Image 1: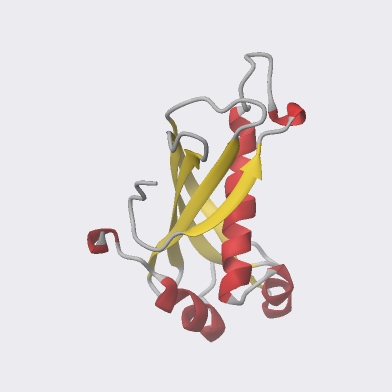
Image 2 (image 1 turned 60 degrees about the vertical axis):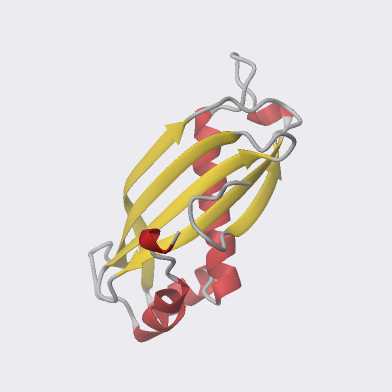
Length: 147
């Protein structure tokens, strides 16, 4: 794979019949769900899961998302979702990037980027990141200029 950045967290999924739409390819909405699952898996690997978020009454919510669909994936294709944290300001904002390849031929399928903001779960309002978010997420940042 020709990853855009070094050391991606890689999450795998195989396109199932229920992921395919009337155009005979994986529906675009599935990529949104898969990115969410890959992002959570990466966060868990780093040490923060939804239970931690709930206990802290804080979470990282997507405020803007961009998806660049490059090629179609079809039923049976194994997809490799690479993800990185590319910016954590230690206050409110975090950026996560994704890159998706088809395993069989290493074809680039998708690139995506999320801009996230830390919120208080109980109110939905932006709130500063708790120290544990900074401790876990800041060291995991892979800067785009490090490629």
